[in-house]
Amino acid sequence: MAQEKLTRAHEFAPEYKFTISNFEDEVIDITLLVQSFNIYEDLFTNTTSCDLIISDAMGLVDGLPIIGDEYITLSYRSSGFKTVTESNQTVMNKDLDPDTPGTQIEFTNRVRSFRVYKIGKRVESSERQQNYILHCVDDHNMINEMLDINQSFVGTNCIQSIADMWKSNFVDTSEDFRPFNKTPKLYGLGLDDPIKSKNTSSYIAPGVTPFEVLGYLKNEAQHEVSTNVSDYVFYQDLHGFHLTTITELKAREPIGSFYVQDPATEADKNKNLEDDGEAYPISMRTIVSYDIKRTFDSLHNLATGLFGNRVAAIDPLTKRFDEKGFNYTTSADQLAPMDVGKITSKESFFKNSGSTHTRYIVSELATSSVPTGVSTQFNLAEQYEKANEYLYPVGGGDKEDGTIKNSDANERLSNIKSGDPKVANPRIKHELLNRRISGKAILDNLMISFVVPGNSDITVGQTIYVYLPQNLGDPKNSKYQVLFGTGDPGKQQHVPKFLITSLRQTYKQGQTSYNTVITAIKDSYGDTIEVVREKALGTKEG
Image (cartoon, rainbow, N blue to C red; front, side):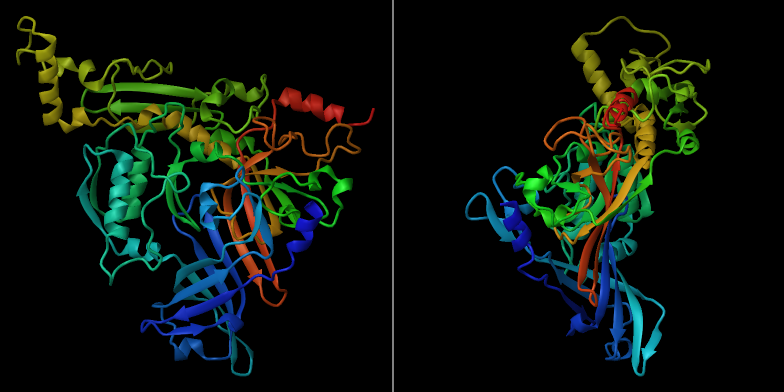
C-alpha cells in the first residue's frame, strides 16, 4: 500500500497560475513571467505576505502600470494524492468531503490574493527584458493602516470585543472599502469561534489602528481555563485569521510525522515506510534537509526571565504594592509544556535564578502587602472591592452605622460597582504575567527548520512529529534524537512533537521545484534530562 502511494504521488503535476489585476480590474495572466514565488506565514506576524520574481518582457511596470493598486492572485497545489479517512479527517479539510472513508484524493487547489506594495530593484537581464521582485502583503494589513478606532471597551469581554471589532471593520464593510479576501469571521482554534475571556476590559482606544487595539485587548485577556497561560496570538494562515493561545495550539493533535530518510526505500526494509494511516504520502513526509537552529542560550534565558522573573505591581488608587516571583525549575509544569522534560536538570545551577528580571506594572491589587523584598503570590482570595471596603463605609462616614442584611449589602455593592468602572473592571494582567514571560521565553530554545516536498495543506499553528537522526554512533535502542523524544506517533508523551511557528511555500519555475520550508519549536525535551542521559548511554555499543 505504501509503495502504491509513493508511485501515485507523482502521477499529477502541480498546477500553478498567476494573474495581476490593476485599478480598472483588468486581469492579465503572468504565469509565464513568474520565475519563482514565496508565500510567508508566521505565528507571530499579523498577516501573510509573498514575493514573486518576475522576468518581464511585456513592459508590465509601464503598461499596466504597476503603481501599488494591483492585486496578485496565486493558484497552486501539491502534486499527487493524500489519503482521507474517518480517523485523520480534521476540521481543516472538511471541504474535501470524500465519498468513502480511506479515499485517495487530490490536494485542494489553493487560491490566495495579495496586494502589491513595492517593486524591488529592476535589473535588465537582456534587451527589452527586466527582472524584478514584486513584494506583496495581504490587504487586511493595508486596510488596518487606514482605519482608526475611537471607542471605549470598558466593561466588555476582552476577546468578544476583538471579535466584534473585527466584524465591524473587516466583515460588515462597504463594497468600495473591503478586503479582497474577505473572511466570514475571526476564527479561534481551527475554524471555531474564539473563546471568551473570563475578564472584562478597562481600555479606551484613543484613535489607534484595529491591530493595535487587538494587541492591547489580547494582552489583557485572561483565558477561562486557569491552567491556560493566556498566551494569546493573532495570526493569519491559508484559512483566515485566528485568535487563540499558544497553549491551545500546543495541545492540538499532530497532522503527520516527518522523517529524514530515503523516499525510495522499500517498506519492508524500513518500518517507518509502512502504511501507518498518515494522510500524506511517504514522499511528502521525507525531510530533504534540516537545521537545528537553536538549542539553548543560558545568558539569553536569564535576560528574558525564563529561569526566574518577578512582577511588581503598584496600585495608585490604594497606594499598595505587591510582587510575585516565578522559578522555572520548580514551576515549569505551569507553562503547559508539550512533553515532560524540562530544559534544565533537577540540580541545575539555574534553580538559584532570582528576580533580576523584573516587570513593573500599574494595576489593581487585592492585597495589603508591603515591599519586604520577599515575593508573594498576589492574594486572590478577596475581590478588589471587598478588599477596599474602607473606601465605601456602610453609613457613608468614617465608621459603620450598625449592620445590614446580606441582600442589602449585595445591592449596595452592585450600585458601587455600576457607578465605579475602576472597581467593576479591575486590571488583572499582573496575575498571569509571570507565566507569560517564562512561557514566551521558552519558545526561543528548541527550534528546528527543515525542507519537505511542497505541501499546500500545511500551515502555521499545526503540530507535527519530527524524527531527526541521532549522532551517538551505532544505535542500540533508537536511531532518533533522544532529546526530542523517540516514542511512536500516537503516544501522549516522549514523542518529538513540534509546533509550526513559521513556514514558506516556495516555487522555482526553471527547476519545476515546489518545496515547503518549515520552522517549528518545542518547549520541552522528550524526557527529563536524567532519563535522557540514561537513554543516550543505552544507545551506544558497550
